[in-house]
Image (cartoon, rainbow, N blue to C red):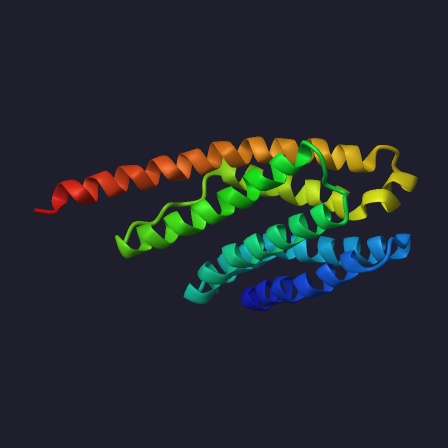
Length: 188
C-alpha cells in the first residue's frame, strides 16, 4: 500500500504538468490543485502507513524521496514557465532545485560509503513549507480570486522554504564532507 501511494504521486506529475501547461483557465488550476493536494497528502501517508503496518521496503525508501523531488522540481519549472514564479523569486526556485541536486548527489556518494544520513526534523519542516508554498502557487491566479494575495502568500512561503532549503542543504553538505574526510583519512 505505501509503495502504491508513492507510485500515485509519481503518476500525478504528468497530469499536473499537463494541466499547468493548459491555457489560463481557472478551472484548470483548481483541478491541478486537487491533484496536487492528493499527491502531497500521499507524501505523509506512505511513510506513516509503512511504519504503522511494518511495510517498509527498500524500494519505498528509494522511491519516496525521488517522488518528492520529481514533484517539487516539475512544479517549480512549470510555475516559472507560466510566470507564477518570476522576478527575484526565481532565486528561491533555483536554490530549491540546486539543493535537490546537491542532496541527491551526496546521498548517492554516501551510499557507496555505506553511510546513511537520516532526515532531520528541520528537513521535514522544509518539505512541509515547500508543499504548502507550491499549493498556494498551483492555485495561483484562480486562488487570488478566492483568497486575496494567494499568490503572494505562496511566494513568501517559497522564500521560507528556500531559507530552510539552504539550512538543510548545508547540513547535508557538512555531513557529507565529514564522511569524505574520514574516508580519506582511512585510505593508505
